[in-house]
Image 1 (tube, one colour):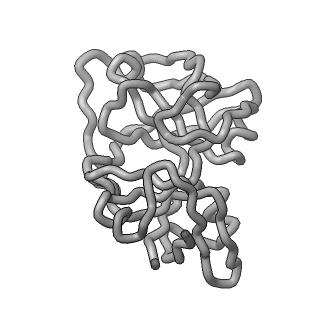
Image 2 (cartoon, rainbow, N blue to C red):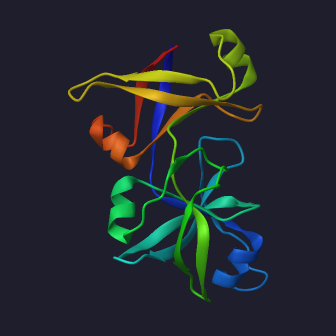
Length: 188
């Protein structure tokens, strides 16, 4: 099956408590644009991240509000900060590391929540049934072109509001020569 592949740049998901510490009490997001997954959006807001070795400036904040603050980086970003986040599925933060987040109204020292997001395939139940795949199953993704390669261990994430899309981080996208989006072949 051919499927859309998106390169997901580094970004931050904030809890309500952390949003107010960074942007001020009662702050509301201003939407920049909708993302491919229903209800997800990029905000007009950014924060700065700091680690023992360096900083990442103007990292995009995504909405909506999450129950826990989570930062998704590529390995290259982690090197720049001087931290070693584990590869984890989004929302699974056990064993994650922290960093400092600075917003326009304050800063916080996050003890955990920084991850290298596991490459994943968002999929609705109807498509999953058609393909014969299940939530948390691993599949492969074949990328064609001058830098052709096959990504192994792409975790399937099934939910009613998901649209069939594979998400790779910027390091993975660069390795495959993807600029923004591409089409790939799902291997089950």
